[in-house]
Image (cartoon, rainbow, N blue to C red; front, side):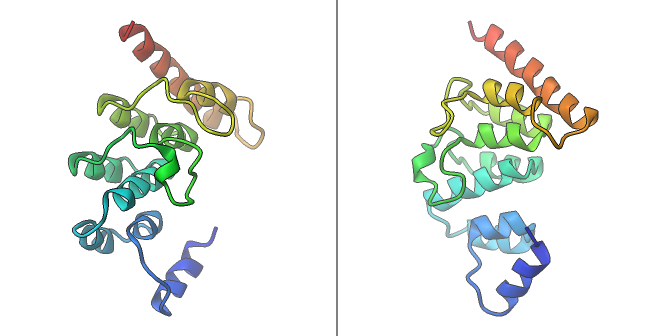
Length: 154
């Protein structure tokens, strides 16, 4: 959970991968590493950006053509149980959720642990302890948005 510790480890020789650069907010490194990244690395980087609700980075990966519906089992270790959209919901970033949905992210995909859709996650997060009213309101707004999108697709 310590970004500074992780950055220190990178300076001391730990491998800097594209997903790590995204998670640490190292945009210059991210841009450089994205040029030679594999599809799998790009997909994981999208999931990392979604997990942290980094809409600008999500946009970057969408513009690069990363599959917003990539199978979670391809994500070597980082939250491999859920899609980028699930992770964006978890972040509480409505902007990130909208970007992914508008780019074609499936509303019906279920995660591999809880068998929940992104909408299910939005509902559940409103019951989680540790969030104040403002935090829970973000998840309620995401729930409303996802319900509206589901109705439009019927």
